[in-house]
Length: 149
Image (tube, rainbow, N blue to C red):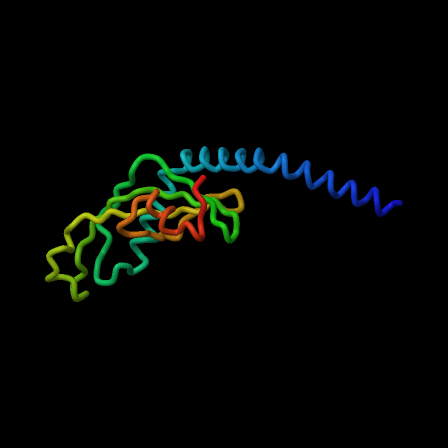
């Protein structure tokens, strides 16, 4: 008889959790978005520093990075972390001796998406950039690993 009541308790707890879970996820997303807006300048600076010291693209130095307004949020299917995607326009200059000095396209502006991650209640960035895709296009391209929110 005890097992029966334990089973009923587990079933009831499961249904309560399933009904509360969307509300908790929405609250987490709201908190993350507010924190992103509050820390945006700091996150942009951290992104530029990490990306410009990554050595990518090879032979080019990051000159400037202009961030678009807003952020597109997605959820990483693998670990449940939130991902913030921000459109950027990047300009580069050739590094002397890097083999890109004679390439005319070096000075062209590049459209890309900067990637930020919300994990353990904190936003961070590794300087990851996805070139030639706007934030919504990133979600479409990587639909097998991230979900739009």
